[in-house]
Image (cartoon, rainbow, N blue to C red; front, side, top):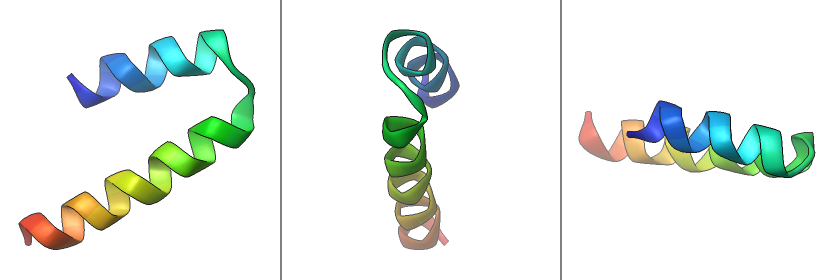
Length: 33
């Protein structure tokens, strides 16, 4: 699901939101671990 969201957002918006999504993903991964 996360990958699909990243792909959709990358098509809709610029790379700035992609970077924010990556930050959120990193935080979520750290929480999961």
